[in-house]
Length: 379
Ligand SMILES: *Cc1c(COP(=O)(O)O)cnc(C)c1O
Image (cartoon, rainbow, N blue to C red; front, top):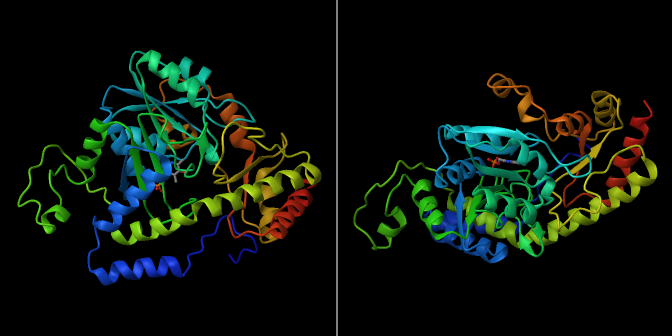
């Protein structure tokens, strides 16, 4: 398809090209100085005490679960309105994800009341997801989790550049995980970052990321070590220097790109309120500063979503759905012990459509999409 307005778009400039070229010329491709620098930059940006660059956010979530000691027999409360990786990562450890509903049609993040209803003696942790970069109710959720002795992992895949009370999302819980997948706000193709303020967790992350080995190729190359021990069953969840180089440049551009996303989202809100008043616009007046990863809207009750999306497609406009809820997938339905009671998730997931949003989008394109949506709604 040759979209007039694609759902998302990434543009790399000469800065990225030069950074990648420098890595290729250096001849050192994995876990070297560039990755260490990327991690330093990311710590400085987020305020996290520790940061570990990984191959992607999915393995980062897996590592976070493992480092927190989550395993067979444990339950982890997760939203269903998320990308399936959130729940899959829990399953990798043998633990069971337990789905909790979102807050409302305006706040698509996990509901603390629903979390309270989902808790059992087996609950070990919560895995939260900051939808579109909008913050979950961290102060209330964390306070309650602490009282209950539960750990908190933040799936911050949407939230690079999101803040609540001036604290970066992903740095509130025990561990936070960011995605640098192609269409995310900071893009390295595949890639991710795990952050924590906890020194013991950080030590686990370092081991788990690299085969459980006590010294790394880089240390040996530097002449710091001759051999190594393996102290746990680790993985190869590393990133490479090429992606870290891309990530460093992308991090420098992040604030500018996110400001652009924010301005375009605001323009969407103005125009949609005026021209498509029947559309729901979630996160109106939401807490914190969002990274505006995506632009979700809710169709009126009873509207035909496929028809709406087809009409936009006919006009060259790409849309998407965030998300088909995880509890409705075959792989998750089958293992359900009881019926899922997620009425708000079901309602929102049936009506949600994601409109195009990316930093190089123009205000004219926002208007084009809005007008097309207004026409499509009259079907
Ligand atoms: C993209 C995404 C992930 C997975 O990220 P990868 O880097 O592709 O593994 C996990 N959770 C959410 C909410 C995401 O949007």
